Image 1 (spheres, one colour):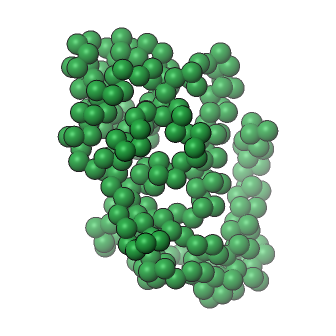
Image 2 (cartoon, rainbow, N blue to C red):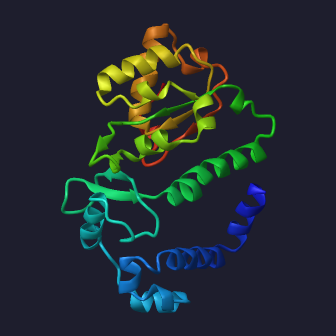
Amino acid sequence: MRLWRIQNWSNHPVAVQREVLQELVTAAQYTEFGRKYNFSKLFSLKEFKKNVPIHEYDNIKPYILRMMNGEENILWNTPVNWFAKSSGTTSDKSKFIPISDESLQENHYKASKDLLSNYYKNFPSSELLTGKGLVVGGSHQISKVNDEIQFGDLSAVLMQNSPFWGQWIRTPELSVALLDEWETKIEKLAHITAEENVTSLAGVPTWTLLLLKRILEIKGKSTIQEVWPNLELYINGGVSFSLQGPV
C-alpha cells in the first residue's frame, strides 16, 4: 500500500501537492489565521496565491508566541503542545516551529515508513529490522513553557513522541538519547551502542563521526564494520558525509 502511494506521488506530483494544500486550507479555515485570509473561500492554487501573502518567520512569530502561551485555533485547528527549536536565518537566535499531532503522524512518521518501504523494495533480502537503529543527534534537552507546552530540538521532539514500536528497534534507551551534555552523552552512547547489533545509523555526519571514532577507540578496532558487522544503512542530510573524513 505504501509503495503504491509513493509511486502515485511520483507520477502525479502537482496534483498531489494541490490536494495536500487544499486539505491544509480546509483544516485551518476556522483558525484565526484562516479567517484572516478567508481560507473557507479558497478553492484553487490561484486563489490561495492571490489572497495569502508570503510570510517570513517574523510575520508568524506573534501567532506562535500566543500558541506557546496556550491559545488554540491560532494557526492550526487542533491543540499544539510541542514546538521544535531551531536556529535559522531570522532576526532571532532561535525560532520555534509548531509540531502538531497531525504533523507527527502524517509527515514525520509516514516519512520513516516510506523510507523503509523504498529500502526493502530495493533490498528485499535486507536484515535491517533484525538489529537496532541508532540515531545520533545534538542537544536533546526538552524544556517546558508550562504544564502543557514543551519545546526542544526536532530530533528530541520526535524521539519523545515516537510510537511504542519505535522503542523496540532503537538504541540507546530514551534517557540516554535525550541527554543534553554532549561529552557525557557521547561517552554513554559509545559504550552502550558498541555492544549492540546496530544495523542502521542516522544523524548529522559531524556528530556521527565523533561517535564512531570514539567507538573505535573503545573497541580497539580500525573500522566500524568490525564493531557492527551487520550495519547496512546510513541516513543523513544537510552535510556531505564524504567531506567529513574517513572512518
